[in-house]
Every structure is written in C-alpha cells, then in structure tokens.
Image (tube, rainbow, N blue to C red; front, side, top):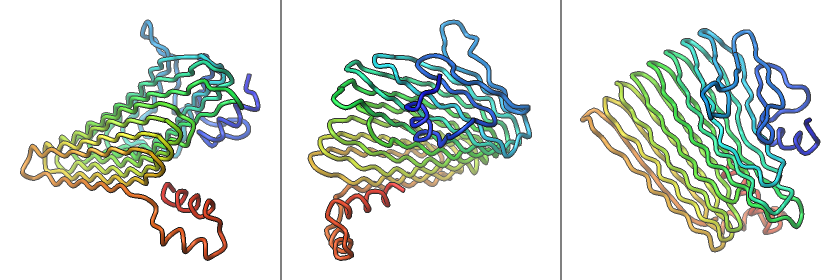
Length: 310
C-alpha cells in the first residue's frame, strides 16, 4: 500500500504525483507495489536464480514514451541488492526515470544497492534520470546508504543523457558508472551532489570511447558542507578518433573535504581529451551583493548553492 510518506518520496525522486500512467514499476521495501507495461515497453521480473529486480524491454522504434522505475524504502533496517536490465531496441527515443528514496523511522541502517545494465541499440536516444534522497524521523539515527552501479553499452550512433542527483540525507554512497561507446555514439553525464553532516560520497566513473566519432562529456557539480567528504574519480579512455571532456566544479564549506581526481588516457593519436577541475569556497562579493538586495546571510548562501546545483 502506498502511504502519504511514500507519495512524498515518489514526488521527490521521480516527480510522480497522482495515478501513474505509462510503463512503471514501483519497488517498496523489497516487493513490487505497482507494475504496468505498455504496448512498446515491457517490464518483467528477473528470471535468473538468486537475483531480485526487473527486465525492461523497449521495442525498436519506440518514441516519446517514459518509463518510471523508482524504489522506496520506509522500513528501518531493510537491505537489498537489486539487478535491473534494460534492452533498448534500434531507433528509439525514450526517457527512463529511476531514483531511490529512503524514509528511516528507526535506529537501524536502511540500504539499497542497485545494478543497472543498459544495452542500447543503434541510433537510439535515451534520457536517464536518477535522484537519491534520504530522511529520518525526528530523533532517529538510522543510517541511509545507497550504492548504485550503472553499466551502459551504446550501439553505433546512439546517445545517452544521464542526469544523477543526490538531494540530501544519504549518509554513505559509492556510485560506480561505466560506459562503452561504439562509433558515432555519445554520452553526456551531469552529476549533482550535496553532502552535509559527516556524510561520505564516492563516485567512480569510466567512459571507454572505442569507435570513431564517439563522444563523452561529464559535468560534475557538488557542494560539501559541515564535516562531509566527497571523492570523484572520472576516467575517460580514448581508443579511436574520439572526443572526451570532463569538468568538475565543487564548493567546499565548513570542515568538509573534497577530492577530485580526473584522468584521461589516449590510446589513439586522433583522440581529443580534456579534463578540468576546480574546488573553492563561495566568493565573498557574491554574498555581499545578495545581502545588499535584502537577503540575510543564510538566504544569500542558499540562493548561491541552489543556482550552482541547478
């Protein structure tokens, strides 16, 4: 049963309100709460022994459809490992909205580990959005942990736009992301992250550009507050006449620590690879300008952070 807490989580992580339409799978506390396929998008349970999760098959030529696959956890102490496999046919143009929200009502650790594997056909376009969010009942101290792994195989001429967001409330996360790009394919990753308290966030990303005219772009923006710790390790490997660009920008506050370790490897004389990284605090003149417009120091800081992570 979907409760009011669940509805709030679904709105935060997947922009879902009201009655779901289209292809959708809502996983709650280890079980399937809602599952609905369409004519062109089929959602089925995993059949491999010992694996929880789903298999999503998007038929060739499917265009203009959206598939929602959020996960919510409202049971303190629940832990799970989920495998989701996506098979996207040729000549598709679709959107997939994932995300995980945890409402921890106790003192036990709640944890979601997920492995998403994408097989994208030729000349297809996929937009993939994944938001992570955690919250606790007042006075409760149960940790919220998420460890997502995403592996993407892009066929010739295909494109994936991947947007990942960690809103707040995740005590520990280790994200692993891998892309294998064939000729003419392109991946664009936008990663936005906010940590606070004593939270730890690690992100390991690798993009293999294996075919001519393959492209990979990474834009990472993060804010580290209080005593939190962030580590980002993006790697781009150019194995052909390809283009890769990694840009990492972070704002550091309080006693936080931010490590940004971009790496590029060219195995072809025709590869063009660029990496940039910047870490710094909020500029004083920006705060002053907003305060002269009537904002308090806290409001000015919040406005700058929201704009930076937008």
